[in-house]
Amino acid sequence: MSAIFETVREIALALPEVEEGPCYGTPGFRVRGKLFARIREDGETLVLKIDLDARELLLAADPEAFFLTDHYRGYPYVLVRLPAVDPEQLRELLEDAWRLSAPKRLAASR
Image (cartoon, rainbow, N blue to C red; front, side, top):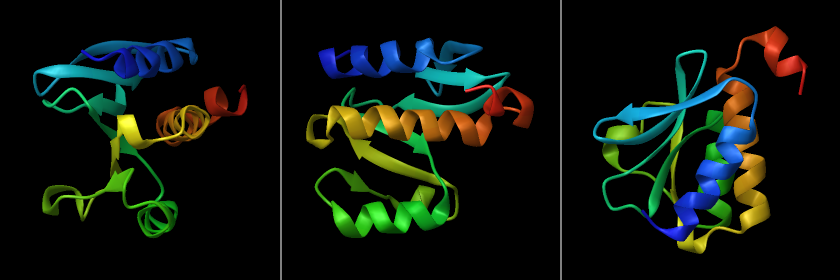
């Protein structure tokens, strides 16, 4: 895995009750069993849970960093090219993805 993925791992595991485990053969991150992020097989693309409206904004604003494949079109996920995304934006996106997946009470604690 890339050094950039190590940053993803560090950010994700610092969030409350996050566990890392396999997801389709690559590392994934879950909060209370609900997936919010996983690395794709190329080691440089992150599958990230996101609000669909926010996804459209990201796709329009920065197509170098954010994209979709047909597989994800109907699901609340966006694909992130890790080498192209700003590290601070990545942190915010991971925290937002965690909030979308965490139980309400746990999400409110952060």
